[in-house]
Length: 259
DNA sequence: GCATATGTTATGAA
DNA sequence: TTTCATAACATATG
Image 1: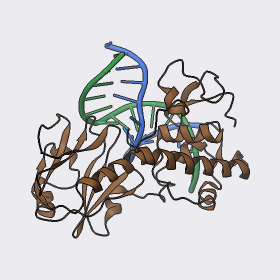
Image 2 (image 1 turned 60 degrees about the vertical axis):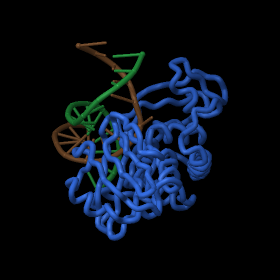
Image 3 (image 1 turned 30 degrees about the vertical axis):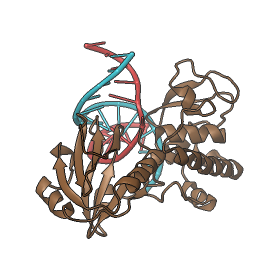
Image 4 (image 1 turned 90 degrees about the vertical axis):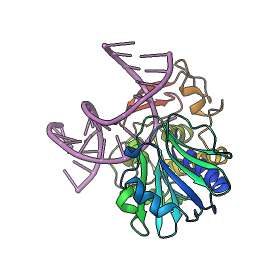
């Protein structure tokens, strides 16, 4: 699930329920998912401290806690779950923060990709690695500058987190569908006008998805059709084409989308 | 048993 | 140097 809009939803969820509250207890339920600290160290950094407001960069959720940051990456199956009364855990809960006032915030992750990092202030990159600017507030000229001179496929470029952060497989397909660009298109073969359309599609898709806290599976979104093996283009009804592109399962409309 | 799945990373080759 | 394909990671589902 988690790409930029999903993490944006987790951020809202966090800020609504957990931001500003004091940590009463830290339960490491799967120590392998706390990637760069031991449980006691994590507890020492968090317990008794107040959680700041969460930020997001790309697919990362960043929670400031005094002189540290808690960094969460959700892999393919991660999410945040808030329980107001601290009841009933889920088997895939990997970390639980019990908060003053009685609730519990849980990091849940079935497949165990991703994880949790503890960073000292200013050392975020040690955990996240280099990240490009967030895809959400990328201006048109920023995007053009980033893409200029790239000879590889445009889908690969959109998903490259070092280039721009936050776009994954589903979102890249959605954006390319909206911009009417074939995911196999080489970036340097796209005209400036089409790159402008790509920027517009990126902006609008993220804006609309963020409002929902996910990439919607609505009928007028590609994502609404791509799970159906007989899925059709919501614009023109042509049967979607599916193939591996940039190493990922891609779906696109062979009629609307051109190289 | 096989294939597939929203992510990242390492590796070797083109 | 850049880009690409592939495998690996771990787990569930069809």
